[in-house]
Amino acid sequence: MMGGVQPDDVIRAYQAFFAGEQRELDIVGFFRDVAATVPAYRKFLAAHGIDPASIRSEDDFRRLPLTSKAAYQSRYALPELCRGGRLDACDMIAVSSGSSGSPTIWPRSLADELHIAERFEQVFRTFGADERSTLAVVCFPLGTWVGGLFTTACVRHLAAKGFPITTVAPGNNKAEILRVLPELAPHFDQVVLLGYPPFVKDVVDSGDSWAGLAVKMVFAGEVFSEEWRDLVAARAGVADPVSDMVSLYGTADAGVLGTETPTSVSIRRFLAARPELARELFGESRLPTLVQYDPASRFFEADGATLLFSGDNGVPLVRYHIADEGGVVSHAEMLEFCAANGFTPAAGPDLPFVFLFGRSLFTVSYFGVNIYPENVTVGLEQPGVSDWVTGKFVLETYEDTDRDRRLRITVELAPGREGDAGALATSIRDQLLRLNSEFAHYVPAERQLPEVVLRPAGDPEYFPVGVKHRYTRGT
Image (cartoon, rainbow, N blue to C red):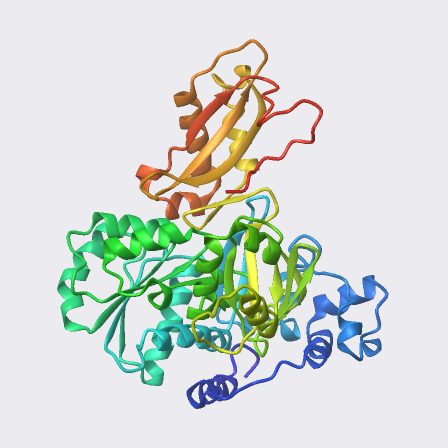
């Protein structure tokens, strides 16, 4: 065999997955393996004057230069980023948009899927899906994007392992989801909806009746409030929001990095009503996503307020700067913090915690899509609107009174000018549809038109004079 996927490797990966073998991530050994087998990383180290043999301890490892899409992934040919310089050793490609909205390609192998399937196994065991017949409805978009096909593959791996799970994958086609559910759901003990939070809520709001379906939910892509969790749980008849609704920390770069657990959700709900404690723990009073991660799968670090992780994939990543704002808390530290504040969280795995507020590279997340200022700028530059705006704007998302996620863009008017918010909203939407394929495929058509708010030049709240402008605002 000249190259390509090696059957023996696949068989070994399946055997380990079926046996539930416990691995340990030797981070120095992992580094040495990547340095020896990945051509791009060898070049990266050489460019920084680093001899791989000099890295002998975890402290040495933590001094290695950071990798990122800009500093590493985009600087080398795609095959060089893979082990042995062989792209054909990977059998699947996912595509995501980078911080500028340009496509980024992430190859992976079946072994990578099996590795991530262990995170889904953790979630589905919480649902009792290892014993109860389960209909898994994949509501993530299908296509080159990682969410739909990756999720479908991982859930099917669980079925192959013996879980009584049957998967249907209508993707983000709401009409098809609502068509197949009434026919299929009565044949199963429970139904699991997997998708981006605002889309799943839209499906729930559009359904006739959820009574008797024993609904569970798996989310990814966005931070949501505990009020939102309660509202959706009530409308879908979810029995226990703490254990039956799970958010994943997932990326196209490396699959699922961590999962909510009953422990993390109960802690988050405790802190939701205590912003002063949330600020003490997380550094901010706003509530991040809080998940637990497996240190045998991913090695997390915090560089200031930015997360780094290392782990094996089709493109192995070492000290990867993913541009998510957040931090790491050990399991012992978290339990000590809870006990000191009179709270005992729900039981769960003895795993460390990672929290994240979202991307720091001037993007906002909407229906699982990164909305980029570069895309919005083009909408402001179109004839008919460009002459009455300055080009400054602020992107933000918020929950309305019905707990639906909305996209708002506040735009600065040129001095002494007036404008048409409706025309500008249409121009921005048209350019988002043209430039951001994920926006076009993920966001339902009725939610694609943003809310545009016009403010005068120099508005002190959004466009203060003499202050460096930020194009996004936290929610």
